[in-house]
Structure formats: structure tokens, C-alpha cells
Amino acid sequence: MMQKLRRSPALMLGLAGLAFFVVLGIVAPFIWTDRAETLTDQTHLAASAEHWFGTDALGRDIFARTMVATRLTLLMCLATTAIAAVGGIGFGAAIWVGGPRVRALGQRVIDVLISYPSVIFALAMVAILGPGVGTSIVAIGLATCPAFARLTTNLAASIAGRDFVSTARLLGVPPSRLLRRHILPNIAEPLLVLLSVAFTVSLKALSGLSFLGVGVQAPDYDWGAVLHKGLEGIYLNPWPALGPSLVIILAGLSGGLIGDGLAAAVNPAAGRKRGYRAKVEALTSVPAYDAHDEDALAVADRLSVVLPDGTRLVDEVSFAIKPSEVLGLVGESGSGKSLTAMALAKLLPDDLTAVAGTLKVGDLDLNGRPPAGRLATEIGIVYQDPSASFNPTLKLGGQLTETLRKHGGASRAAAAEQAVGQLAAARVTLPEQRLKQYPYELSGGMRQRAMIASALLTSPKLLIADEPTTALDVTVQAEVLGLLREANERDGTAILLISHDVGVISAICDRVVVMYAGRIVETLPIERLRAGEAEHPYTHALLAATPTLHSPVDEPLSSIPGRPPHPAGRPAGCAFASRCPLARQQCHDELPVLTVTDTGATACHALHWDKEVLA
Image (cartoon, rainbow, N blue to C red; front, side, top):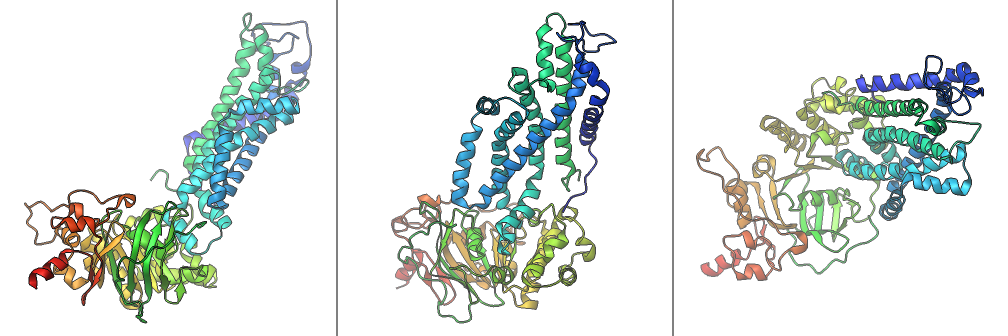
């Protein structure tokens, strides 16, 4: 969907300059051709009222030749830029769509091609194919392609990690449509800037080839050829060289201004994996749920998320979520919470692999290749950053109704009606009007409510809320948590709520899973967490670092010294041992087993020490 262009002084100035040169290119041959090509005995004349740029060695008017050369020069530049943009963006897009292996090989090819200066590559082509207009266009165009290809692949890779792209992948959007609808519109701005650079570069490169005598050949001539002739008598008369040079600079400047102006104008917010599987080692912990529980809706049994080198970012995590239950997943940043959730949603990056004994939602087996339609409708996701939850180049209406239209078979009107109803249920003001707006036109709180409405439109069995309140103020946080609890109570939707904030978890969850360094260290009912009756020292540390209404205002909050270990450098024993005040040598040497109790499960050697003392 095309965005409405915003007024930009740079764009207006650049368009005015380009329009001038386009008009000049059209009319100049009709006005000045005779003066430009007529040979006279008035050679090497200085600039005057009759000959503004003087004359060349054959008595031809330099100004007239410069004006007439505008048409051929612009046509060559436009053709060269089109070859570079279409070829480069097409090649870069094909590499990105081709998958991890094709992407890696394609990027190496691009790196090799871009390491050679474009002019050197063009000179080599000209030397092989012979000088001329067509050869110059093709040579400079192909030489500029790698720059577009590299920028396209790099930008596509950065956008591919955004939340709205993850949502599209969850919906089963094919790579070609994903590229066309979500990737390319969001990388248009830097590509437009590069387009303006390519126009200017091609102008200089083409003029350079003609200046060297290997570009445009007589009787044709462009600005570079005129400049070449003007240099013959530069010590006697500089104007035959200065005139064409000035025109080249002005044309290049116009192209640059257009690119910068377009980049700002099209921005709607302006002015306001699997080629491998890691080997699963023997079970080292006891699952924190009953694997035979028929009531479990979502089940993760010995789930690991593994890098290509075998490093486990998430290490044999086991949990279950019952229908209508709100399960909290809490821990410091880097503990593996989001990776665990994204593995459950089949949205891990290409370089990560999820390995599990069981991984399912309802009867949907996530260890295999579940149907995209069921995956999109049975799992909903609310992301952390409301500003990244939606594609900024598309209006909300199309994004909110895409799942219903693609996988629910609803018409556009019926999907819009359901979207309006869900927005109203999420307490989004003016829901009909919001469908016609872009995401940036909504406040952060409204965007998050709209994201919740979008996730609930298909009545999913499981809703994954990945730190949905982090970017919001306290008042809006409470409203968002209230909406999640309402959906849970009204529709019976099971929720996996991820947060590093124990207070947020305590507000709406029924049960809590505490993660540290990619492993589960404790599970417990929310009542015990609220009462401060945790058993693991890490959970106690998190509670102590959480402010309460009863905390003394003049007493500093507790902090946890040190940092979690790197996944590749986890110790043989407990990962929390180096930060734990209760740690003994056993903690450093032996990995504690997650021991299931009547109220939850805890992985801590200190539990057994206490029992030994009591005995």
C-alpha cells in the first residue's frame, strides 16, 4: 500500500532540478542541434555573450553541445540506475528468500563483487565488449548491482527479526509475499537513498568513461565527451571544461536531493532452520509436570534451544500449561524466557534449533511441521514493544484482519467487523477509525491494546505475552494486565506471561516458573510467591529486589551481585552458585536436580541440607 507523500523541501528542490533537466533534455536537441554540430573556423573562443561556454577545437558551440548532450546523458543514467536497482534488489531478495545456506553463499559472492571498484569492473567489460553507449550502460549498471544486493540482504535480515514479521511467519505467509508485503516496504527508505547515490555515481562513472574515450563514441556525445573536448584547451580557456562540469554537478545534486526527500516523504512517521538438529543428551533433570496429565493444553518436555555449535541457550526446560491457566515465566534478561516461548510458537531464528521430547499445544505437534493455518489461529502472541508489533507501512485494518481472511475464510467486511468488535473489547477508542490509521498514529498503550485484540481475534487456545508491559507506564501496565486477565476469564484462553518483573507476574498469574541461565530453578503457585515462601535462593533474590508498598522509602532495594554465566561457559554445578550466599562446594561441582514437591519443584542442593539437619 502506497503511503501518502509528505511535503519535503529537499524533495521539492530535487524534483524541480530534475524536471528542469528533463525538459532541457526534451527541447534542447530541437533548439541547439545546429549550433552544436556545425563546424566553424571560430575555434577555441573564450566565453562570451554569443558563446556562453566558448567553442571547441572544431569551432562548435560548447554550451549548445552541453545542452544537446543532456538527453543522452539522462537516458543513460536512468537506464544504468534501473539495471543496478532491479538487478541488485532482485539478487539480494532472492538470496534472502533462498534460506540460510543460499544466503550465506550469496553474501560471500556479494562481498567479493563489491570489493572491486565499479569503474574498474566497467573498464574491464568495455575492454572485452568494446566501447559504446550500450556497453557503458550495462557495465556501470552491473558494477553497481552488488551495492544494492548487499544493502537489501542486510536490511532484510534486520527487519526479519521484527515482531510483525514473526507474526506473519506464524500466519504461514510464504517467503515471496513476506518479502513483498513486509520486508521491502520497510527497507524502502535506505534503498531510495542508495537509488539517489546510484544515479549520481552512474552519472559520474558514465561521464568518466566518456572522458577517458571508452564510453560514448562519435558522432554521439554525452556530458563526459563534451568535457573531454573542453579539456583540450583548458589552459587557454577554462569555460569549455567548467561548463559541462557545472552541469554534471547540478544534475547529480538534484538526484541526491530527490533520494533524501523521498526517504523522508514516504516515512509515515516522519515529522511526528533447519539444516541440522543437535543431539539430545540423556535427561539430567526431572520434568516439572506430569507427562501423563491429559488436561495439559501446552506441554514442553525437555525443551532445549541449541546453537549450531551445540551450545544450549535453553537447557532441557519442562513445563505444562492447563486450559484457562495463566503461567508466569520470570527471570533476568538472558535467562532464556523469550527463546522458550518462541520455540513454543515455532518462531526461532534460522540459526537456532528447538529439540524436545514433547512440544505441543492441544493436539498440535510442534516437533514436526504443523499446518500454518492451525499454528496461526491456535497460538496468539503479544510482543514486548508496541511500536514494533505492527508493520509501520501498512494500515491497522489490513494487519488486524489478515489472519481471519487468510486462515478463517472471512470476507474483508466480516473480518473488519470482527476486528472492530475485538478492538472495542480491548477498550481501544474509536475502533472503526483505528482500522484506517497507521500504527504511529496510536499511542503506545493503544498500540498494545490493538496488539492484544489482534492476538485474540482467532480465539487462540494459547496466548504468549512476551513482556507486554515493559515499554508502558504503570497506569497502562495495569490496564494491559487487566485485559489479559479478562481474556483468560471470558474466553478460557491459556496464557504464558513472560516478564522479568516479579510484581507483574504476581498480579495475574496462577503459577510461576523461575528460569536462570537457560534452566528452570523453581516452580511454585502464585500464592507462595506473593507470600515470599519461595525455596530457591535466586527466587528469594528476585523478590528482595522487587519494591512493594510496604518497602521503606529510605531503604535501598536489594541487588544480586555478579552476572549470569554465558551459555557456552556454564559451570558443571549450579549456574547460580557464584552469586548465591548459601553456596557450598557441592553447588560448584554438582548440577542440582529439579525435585518435584507437592506445591511445585526446586533445583537446589540446600533443600537436602535442610532435610539432613531436620533429620
